[in-house]
Image (cartoon, rainbow, N blue to C red):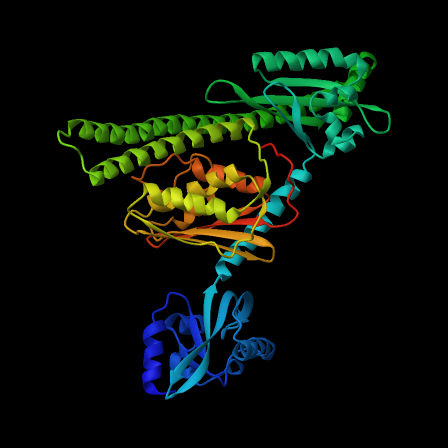
Length: 532
C-alpha cells in the first residue's frame, strides 16, 4: 500500500475507541488500531501483512475468511456476534461489524474490508453468572420443605407454592382467593376461618394448626403461620405465610399424652421432645427477629424517600416561582427570546414535577399490585421518537442523537408504559451527564429480540453499585449531589419484565453509562398482567 494511503487510514482509525482491523484484497492486514493490537495481544509490526491463519485456529480462520470473501465480492455489510480465540488461548465474545470500503490508493481503486469490533466477553460472562445464580436460588425455593403463600390486604390468597398440589391433591388455581378452605377438615373450618378473619382485621400474626384433605382422601395436620407486611402509611400491603406439615409431630404428641396416662416411664421421652421443640421455637424466634429488623430497615428507607421527594418538589417549584416573578417585574414588552427562555424553564420544571408524581404513583401501584399492562400493536420507533422529541424540547443543554431505523414497523407493547420506560432513561441520561451534552439512542433487532439502548458519557456508576441499581430507593455513590428519588429504574425494570423482556446496564465511572432494553418480538402474551 502506498505510504500516503496508510497515513490517511492511520489518521482516521488509529485512536478509535473500539478495535478496528483493515484487510486488503489478499485478506492480509494493512492496518490495526491501538485497541485492535491490544485485543489480539500481538504488536502492530507482527500483524501487518499477515492473515488470520497466522494467529487463529484453522476452523476459526476458515470461518473469518469465508465471511471476508463474501463481503469483498458482494459489498454486503454484516453485524454479528462471534467467539474468537486469542494468542493466550482465552476465548473472547465479540460483536463484529464488517463492511467493504473502496478507496483510491496509488492511482487505482482498491477494495478493503473494514472490521470494527466491540468486545462483550465480560458482559456475556456476567450474564452467565447471573443466570446460574437465579437458577440456584430458584432450586433452593423449590426444595424448601414448607409451602409458602402470599395473600393480599383483604386476606385473599394470590400466590401459593407448587408444593400445594402435593399437599392437597388440588390445583394451585383452585386455592386462590378463599378456595383453600375447601380442603380444611369440616371440624376445623370454623376455627380456621374465624382466626384468619380476626388476624386480617387486627393486622396481627396468625399461628394455627388444622387438618387438610390430601389427594389420597386422608387428613393430615398442618401448621399455618402468617405475618402482615405493613406499608409506611400504616396499611397492610401483603400477607406472607408458611404451611408446615406437622402431622407426624401432632400424632406423636397425642400418642405421648395417651401413653403418659398409662405409663409414667414415657416421661423422659416427652421431656426430650419438649426440649427439641423449644430449640425449634428459639430458632424460629431468631428468624422472626431478623425479618423484623429487615422490615425496620425498609421502613427507614421509605422515610428517607419521603424526605427526598419533599426536597425534589421544592426545587422545580422554586424555579417556576422565580421565572414567574421575573416575568411579572418586566416593565417593557418582553422579547420572544426572553419569553421562550422563561417558558422553557417553567415547562422543564413542570415536566420534572409530573415525572416525580407519576413515579410516586407507579411505585405505589407496584407495591399494591395493581399495575396493568395493556398491549396493542403499535410502533415502538414512534414511541421512543416521541420521548426523544419531548426530552429535547425541554432540555436545550443536550443534543440527543437517535437512530431507530433498525426497529420493526409494529409490535405488541403498552405504549404508555413504554413512554414511561424511555422517558425515565432519557431523563437520567441528561441528569447524570451535566457536562457531556451528547446522548445516543439506538434501536435494532437481532434474533427476533428488539434492542433499544440509551447511552451517555456522564458520571457513570461504580461497579459495586451495578447489582443493586434496580432496587427501590437505591441510589449509586456517583449520584451524590444529583437530584433523584431512587424509584425510577425500579419501575422501568418492572415494566420491561411485564413485557417479557430484560434491561441491562454497562457503565464505568467518569465515562458514562449505557442502558439497553431487550424485548421479544414474538410469542408475546397480549393479556393484561398484574404486578406481583
